[in-house]
Image 1 (cartoon, one colour):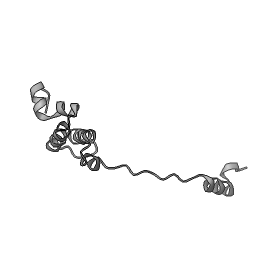
Image 2: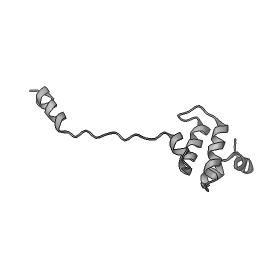
Image 3: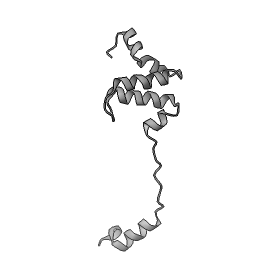
Image 4: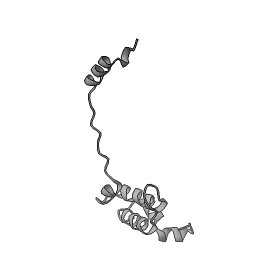
Length: 90
């Protein structure tokens, strides 16, 4: 007794299940480049920590500054000058 895994049954089940398209997720660079402050901050965090990309603190500072210029509060606190003012590690 193979039941549900019998080839004919499996073929039928797979033929009636609708195929759902997978939505493409835009890359962090693509969303950050269109003046999305949250995406710019997220990209800064990625560059700052090296999560998913090579660590690049200079690039992180640029992304943080772009987000901060749009009044993104967390970015304003993450910029290198803000870190120095609070004596946080760079």
